Every structure is written in C-alpha cells, then in structure tokens.
Length: 332
Image (cartoon, rainbow, N blue to C red):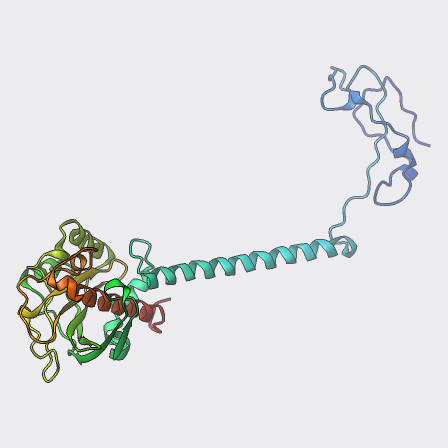
C-alpha cells in the first residue's frame, strides 16, 4: 500500500503511485487521475514559498504519467510517415515548378529582347559562339515575314538576295562608327542583303559578334544612348552590294536609313541600312529612330525606309535569340 501523503511533508521526491493509477491516456485505469482536481496554487503564477512547495502547506496532488509516445510503433507512425512523404513530394513539386518558371522567365526575357544585368551567363557565352554554329538560313532566312513592320502597321515581306562571306569588320562601317565600336572588338561579321516584295527597296542587315564581356557591352550601349551615336549621319554602317542583284548599285551614297542595336545580354551588335533599289543618291539620310517617328515628313520617312531597316533588324535579332535558347552547344 502506498504511503499516505503528509500535508507537512516538504520533500521534493516523487512518491510511488499505485499501479492502477500509473496508466493514463495510453491505456489502463484512470481512476486516480480522474479523482484529482487541479489546484490553482500549483500553477506557474502561484506564490513560491521558501519551504520548497507552492502555496502555504496545502497537500500536493498525486500526479500520474501516461505511457510515453512510441514513435516506432507502426500504429502511431503510419499516419505520420504518410504525412512526411506527402510533404516531401509537395516540396519536390514546388521546386520543379519554381525552377521551370525561372527558366521560362529567362528564356522569355531573351526572346522578348529584354537586356541588362539579369542575363544568364550561359546564354551570353552561347550567343558569342553562334557565328560558327548556326546555319546561314537560320540566322538570315531566305524570306522574313514582317507583320505590322511597315508604316501604319502594314505587313512586310523581305526576300534574301545575297549573303556576304563571314569576315572581319574592315570597311564595314564609317570610320567614326568603326572607332566607336573598337572597344568591344570584332570577332566576326555576318551580313546579308534583302529586298522587299516589290523590289523597291534594298536593306543590308549585319550581325557583329564582339570579343567583349557583358560589362563592356553595357558600357557601349550606354554611350550609344547617352551620346545618340545611332542617329549621327557620320556613324553609319555600310551596305553589302551584290553583283547581278537589285542591290548591285547599293553603295554609301545610296544609304537612306539605318539602325544600330547594341545588345547587353550577348556580345552582339545588330544593324541594318536601307535604300532605294533604283540606285538613287540620298542627300539627307535619316536614322530609323527619327524616320519612324509619328509625324515624320522627310522623303525617307514617307517612303518607309526607316521601317525597312528597323523591321528587318528586329526580326534578325529575334531569330538570333531563338537560336541561342535552342543551341545544343549552350553551356549547362
């Protein structure tokens, strides 16, 4: 028989509890526990006396301990293990979806033409090697659709009439433009010349692959934007005139409009220069940025030659971005 509790006892020992009252929620008798009513003096807020007990000499209740949780018990761990597995699967799914969204965002940003410091390093490196890995028909397609690329949103269709051999940049730019591009270097230059569906206009589009890193390309782009280099008539790219084509007489004097686009997420400069196909001389060429403005009334603007240059350059740039996102040589 267990010892009787003495109200004056101050020991901190736990007295033995009767066997029938040792079992709690885990099983067995709970009569001893049911008979005990918690006493407010045993709460954390009760006054603690110097005798080592809470309150002022009132008897302490008999406390019973239930059986401890058995975490290796299949009956208890079955549901818990299922929950853990479900949480693990959910976490894995979230990770895969997140990675997919990030990858999609990067590819979408590139295809949309978003430039800047957020460009992926692997994409930048892959773009620099496209000049020797992408077929000419992929970079400069035989025909290029320009939906909404003409004045007033008119559609355009360009047909390729000549492709220049890949080369260095010697003689490809006006001297001052060549000097402005010199800091990024010239790895390789690719060019092709197109005509419109009516063979009224000719346009040379070029893709310059530089030797520069991303910081140098950003610096060049900033300079072009700040100093408005892309609008100066003494800094124009030169056309590629191919014999026995409607562009045979397309020389420096026939240049009517042009555009130069410095990419910052790839070591690439894309440009285009346009003119009439009848070899007429242009006394006052106008940049595509100015010739495509609303209300522009110059002969170049009215003819839509600014749209020819800008529209074709934009679509070649889009094709370049599409090539780099699908390139098998893209670094992992």
